Length: 285
Image (cartoon, rainbow, N blue to C red; front, side, top):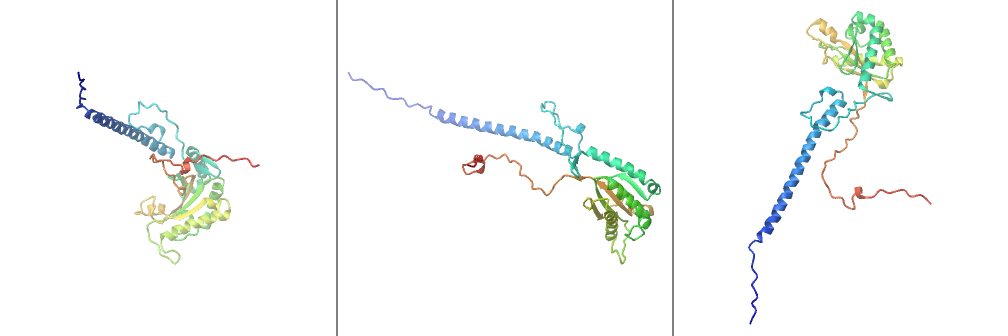
């Protein structure tokens, strides 16, 4: 009796193997996409925080103005921002301390120059960049001249002696009205305004009360008016020299920028310097 060997059945379900592999790869692909989307949301949440910290460090935003949408479910605690450094000689002062110093200088100047303030030849106020001591042309210069009047030299020496006791910089700005000038000495208001500023700077340097590296002089002609040039009174106010007492900010724009981390993955090989182990110094025999 001969035995019969059963024939192997050919299955029709082999496609399920390839289909299962495809579904597994597709699932992994969507997991990666989901992970990338979550990472992007985290970066988006960090953007307003970075902007907020930058503006608060410059003193533009206050603590009470910090609102970025609905952040009730945020568990991280806010850290106080570091204000922009103000360098005064070897000291680093906070903006509030600088403001208090300038207000103290303003009170001293107002008391010392009370007669000049009463005669409207000098005015003292807080400006955008610092404390402004405004010298009107009528009290310090003759029309069309860049040389201070002899009777005004005493006031200038008083100002220099008082400001020399501080560590603040002094920017001397010359301004004119919009009436053109063309003389043998000055071709335009640019030259006149700059000459007036440099004459006062020279007086301060010769008196040796303010270090020259803290002084600067500039002429702005008629392009920074404080009143309308349509009236005589307005033009008289625009003909002036502003002494701006200002701090020196510690911002070095010439420093090379550091490249931010791009977050791109790269392969580190044995030749990469980052992969080299740090060398430990060996003692000399």
